[in-house]
Amino acid sequence: MFKKIMKVLFALGLLLLLAAWWLFFKSITGFDKSFQYVYIPTGTNSQTAVLKALQQHGSISSTSGFHLLATATGYYNNIKPGKYRIEKGSNAFSIIRMLKAGRQTEVKLVIGKIRLAEEWAQKMGQLIEADSASIIRFLRSKDSLKTLGVDSSTWPTLLIQNTYNVYWTQDFGTVMKRLKKEQAKWWAQKERMQKATALGYTAEQVYTIASIVEEETNMTEDKPLVASVYINRLRKGMPLQADPTVRFARKDFASNRVFYNHLKTPSPYNTYLNKGLPPGPICVPSVATLDAVLNAPATDYIYFVAKPDFSGYSVFNSSYTEHSKAAKLYQDSLTAYLARKAAKAAGK
Image (tube, rainbow, N blue to C red; front, top):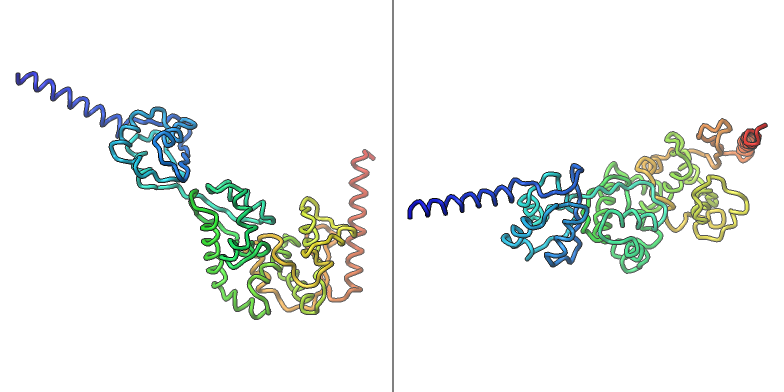
């Protein structure tokens, strides 16, 4: 009798060891990469949906061990949505523990130059659970934007170029509130608000000027001088006559050239037709450009034009006569360059 009991106990022990090995040591992943992401959508409330998400793309090769442990631990009673990173070779226990704790993987949100609401919506739609269509609706909703202190023209002012960590399950409004806090922190540093006040502008207006400067030149040394030109024009009550605002009005960003007929484009953003600043930024400028505007030197420059050597730098002038000479030099150089290019294309 004793021997039979010992055999039964041994068999049970062996089964327990096998079960422990299966749950705590055996890999249940079914992919070859070093890791894979699993997405469990908000509102998931069934074991079928969880198992389906885990089986997609071979995240787990077998659901039996996972299902047993998930049931035993009560995971299905409190499913936490999110984007989860499963490492190759993970066992059922480690995956369950991560999912039960809701240890989501952070998503890196890198904000660069963005011009249109559609661009921002597409970018965010690829990073968070919300789709781009719902994000566009948010950006066009007066009530939604009012809670952030912006409107459909000024919402880009909430974006400061940087890298932020967010979660896939965060709704778009929550992300924007986070970015609004980051924006406020940025303006509170390095006496930026004081500098904006000294210039006679709000943070929003500085942002709009910076967005035009951002589109006007890539040359770091020229940015403060370009900013000084626009500031001088505003103070004199002159129209900005900034070509980038015309391109924005036309939604044409493929070419840097603006022709005479383009200047007649009807739009509140066209600074050839309207004095003062446009209703909002024409892009999300870099931090360096924002600071270039805030630290713009006092100059008497009213005009600038690209240098004829195509270096990317500009010639600045306070005299229209001198500006006209510089503009002619550039135009002559451009005409000659285009002629050479055409001749080369024709094989001459």
